[in-house]
Image (cartoon, rainbow, N blue to C red):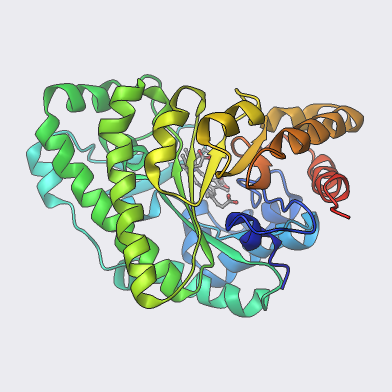
Length: 349
Ligand code: CP3
């Protein structure tokens, strides 16, 4: 197996810097569009053979060093009992928005093998089809990011309803977060039992907070999940690295490093060496190219690759990635070139 990604997650020596790309299976790839042209997004997520097919596409096309399960962070939200739809223009819409005691009370902590069996089936198919070519990453939304979608009922600009609940009805927010935290923990355990070899927690909206509020209302729940998962992994005698990704990390690195994760995502708003200094040189980092830097001419992309690789030398380990997901307008040729550049310029003698 190409286990460079797993080795880098553990801070072990690697022959080259591994790379995978957030949202590597997606609309910028004509092969994805072909499958997606036949079914809507949710049906794609819920049809294991198709979800496995689009998961594997970027492995063959881009030659990345890890596969990430094709699914969405909102799948567990539906399993908890909300109605979920994806609209072409508005994005995800969840009803009824969770705003009061009654709606929180009705939410379930689902049995993942029962309510999200299609995810575990996709993982089981993938482990067979990947045949240990590259490791498979599973994922979940972190509790706070998941909660924003449930409280707002969709995507939001200023997260007014979420922050209002936190500041005006803290006990209600805590009750909601406790249910999501239990759901995420069980969901990730089920993914690991089905065969994922690493897991990533996506806290896309963690950066909307002051450090103090991030710690109280997002990080504390992530810490609990990671602590419980690590205890369970130890008892089961399995080794599965945990990656914690936060969108807009620069103001929060001193807090983020308390999460207890094995790998920390770093966005592009900070130089990677500065981020490593603040996380500590024993940290393993993932990142940190601006997704829109893929619109530069290839020789300039190459300069940025070399710059990030040299700044990463300070860390115990580095996994190359974008600081956030690849956007649909990106040219696949530039993504293919990026993967090749990272592999070439990071060869250790
Ligand atoms: O990374 C991968 O390739 C794995 C698959 C994956 C998707 N979403 C597929 C997807 C992963 C890991 C996610 C995570 C996700 N989903 C996040 C966290 C990461 C991030 O990007 O910030 C969030 C916030 C979501 C919620 C979500 N899903 C939104 C807001 C949208 C609509 C906006 C958009 O980009 O269309 C989605 C849809 C979605 N998730 C698509 C894909 C490929 C596009 C659906 C389509 O084909 O129309």
